Image (tube, rainbow, N blue to C red; front, side, top):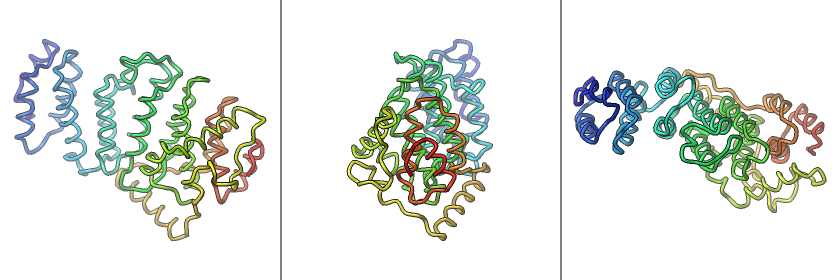
Length: 345
């Protein structure tokens, strides 16, 4: 415990506070040490939990040291494998819930900093957003006057950051565990508690993952998330939402005119057999590195989950309409499912 020798851990715990002098000594010890041990990291977590009163400089140092340890020092360096993801989740959560905004920031920082992470870590982070929506409480709601059943703009932004960062060096679309987490967030939102920003994020990211599983070429998730703020994309999804809300409106046909449509998908094409093979290899490589199964968000999954949709869920109706409209190739089962939902294929 080289770093922790610089301070009196017992004294800090007794008084329940970490002061500027403690932080300064820790900073010197951290910058002069060659390696951070797991005992150091766990000791810092225990100090964080035991000190309701913290000098403002503590947060940035804590985030820096723990991120450095888990991403750049723990093996394999640069990657968050399943075992390390479980360790980190165990450190930041109690019964599956993150207790402080600092720990939530840490999780997102780690996902953004690592080259690849286990999908379970991204899903865990997304589940904290679901909990905030369901309960209206927790670190994501601190200082915000937002009731349960509503998703806030910062929560939409954090969701986008998590999706964008995961698998930064891959072109993989959403994994199934991420898709499940997104759908769970949507189902935690009460009628009237959604927002156009959330609708666009859900429909385009989840829709793209289904299109990828159907063999289409889709943008890397970073490009996709960055393009969501495009006025053309937003107006397309919002227009489809209006169609889902008003049964007299026709949802856009998937081979209709490009004007007002989502231009990203107007040029979507079917992958060649060689490209599909490369995609499978990329997924298998991520499975080997992270030691977690990477499942696709395919059409069977989509139909199973949408069969459970609550009546009148505009976001999920729009998701299906988006896939039907943008796909160049559909399975017979998905066409029949869409037909039963009165969405033209």
